Length: 437
Image (cartoon, rainbow, N blue to C red; front, side, top):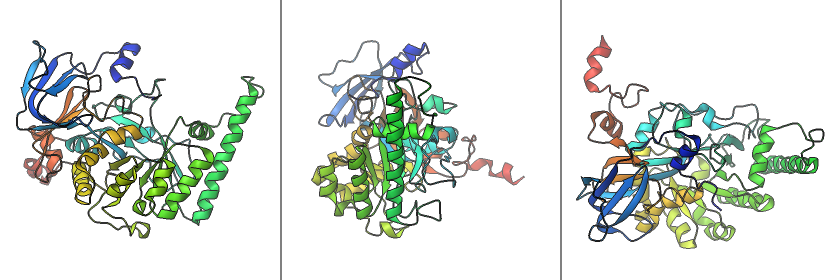
């Protein structure tokens, strides 16, 4: 059963809060629609109301409600909102130098929602993010799943699970990033040993709680870090694992099998070397696709073909930005590069949408254009994988959050002076004279 099946509107109703989206019905007509869940529609209709998709289909067979406001998008392309399984926007700071394993840390406690990275993300068509700690730790803390619906606090952005708690996974890493002087591991073998010991300790903590059977006198002292590890062991919280080299990938799969935890492999520079092993383990992969490989020795064999090889092997494959490694505004370009290297166009679009949603347990809500799902979509000027295509509008839960025709939004889309200044999105090149004074 999917853990995150409540829509934001259902949750708001339960909490007695007003819906952030308008009750107005809007029908987008005439666009080429790529629903992902079905075949492309040459000239379609997308109807949204109260933050959800009401209907999607061909123009000649999809009824438009008489009270709907019609928006003519003929000549444009509509795709689902893009899902980024691995982002670092928000000026985040997770675990510190006190130790290599810090599962008590929550990345949500460090996110600045006014950080301009969020505006650049919607300028790239991104609507759902998995914001993660860095990869300098074997375990750097809890990740957070957010919707880019706008707001003044992280509570306005994060997605809630069925219990109303922040939805997210856990960030883990191996390879060179998490190796350093003690107390950090100095070798790959020690890295695995430390994680194995941590999970065994969590098993013991879990068993003590079970034996206590609710008796406070027998309960072990509460440990926030071990609570997170127990959630991993109970498969309630997925591990998002930074890993590059083929042997590091296999080490992750070995640990996941030993402790029966759910894992998504991130980056997988050498994934093309061990695609069959990954497929046999049933582990999804979130791939980084960059046009200038390098940066670290363990990524020396990174190859554009990785996504294609994994797709052919039957691996659930997504693509991520690792923003800033890839600017969120260039996310569609990563999909295009994967297609260039042999991935199918259909697979590449899924890798930017529904495949990532599945890895975050959010595919009941986002990742495709279907009735009942959140009205998260992007209006493009042309084909999603053309270098000439621009993101014209981004909508989240029926609310327009980016409009390229708006000068303030345009600045975030194209860069330029002021595009990265927190809290001052309207400062353009014309304010230079004032600054010089």
